[in-house]
Length: 115
Image 1 (spheres, rainbow, N blue to C red):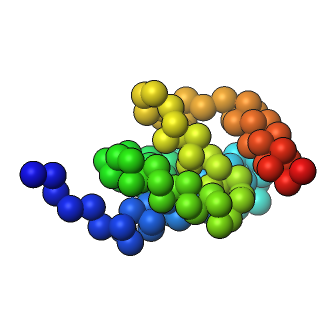
Image 2 (image 1 turned 90 degrees about the vertical axis):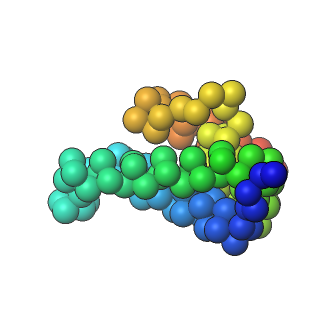
């Protein structure tokens, strides 16, 4: 018997992953804006982001469904990022992403949804 999946906790994983992605991406675009974001804090941020994505992956179909619901309610780059990360056939580490390509994809996809 599979363990129960707590919907509210999975929703929190989706929300936090989207939020942390936005913080990470903003920092990578503007590294001098927050001098307190040193290498240790950046590594912790990435670790937290990865943990929330893992929480969604562990929830399986429900994790993907909740991430989709969050995106439908908030059509923002963070929510779309979470969906794309969950759609990958194998987990991709955040540090391995080509941020320019990710930003380009998110921008184009969000523009198309607004048309």
